[in-house]
Amino acid sequence: MTEDEKKEQEPVQDPLNAPEKKPEPAPAPAPAVTRERETIHEIRYVEPPEKKKGSKLKIIGVLILILLIGVVAVFATLNVTVYAPVAGAAYPYTTTYNVWFPLGQTVDVSGISMVALSTGEEMLIAVDGNTQKIDVGENKLISERRAIVKTLGMTIVDTNFQIFLNYRGLSDPKTANFYLSVKTSQQVPQFIVNLLLPKDIRAVPA
Image (cartoon, rainbow, N blue to C red; front, side, top):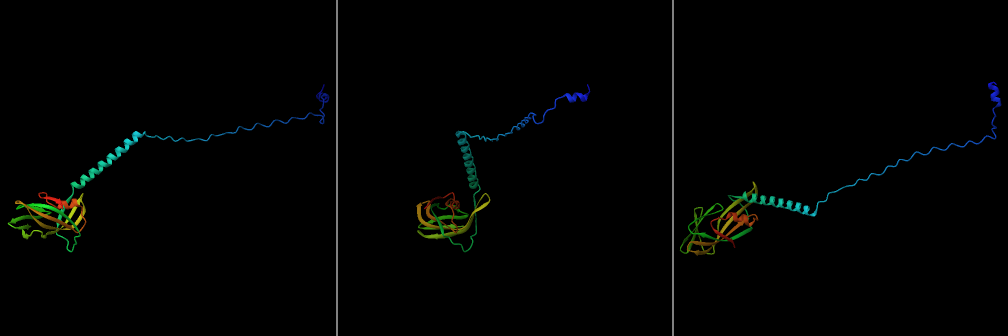
């Protein structure tokens, strides 16, 4: 049998009665890629209360130590230099002391040499070799100068000053009592005025 004869014998499908072709299923959708949101967690170290308190106390202690060192340095370098006065100054500020001078002894008051001498009922004051008589209750100008106070190399006070003595009488045969007033052209703390007083006389604020 020939090839042509074989083809003729094969049944031919009626196109009207041909079975319907089932549509091929649609491909499954690709799986969606989901990304989880990253969360950043901040971890802080909290010191225990005891450690915090200890740290604060240490800082306060260091600050107090620095302050004390600074104060000591200020007083250690404190010095007063006396010059001739600036002319025309006014003296609105006054600090007064009750003082006792040893008779016949030289006393240095801010660079001024002073000696109290008693001759019976009279009192004589020798200031830098210049002797003046002073009566009881008399207020006498003894000296006028300018003082510059420095510490740590810096000027903290620059003032003219006057020293007045008011004779009050003899305390005993060896001691004369005075009011000593220091008048300044600038307002000056009392502890700095104290620097103008000699160490070898007894003086208390009046």
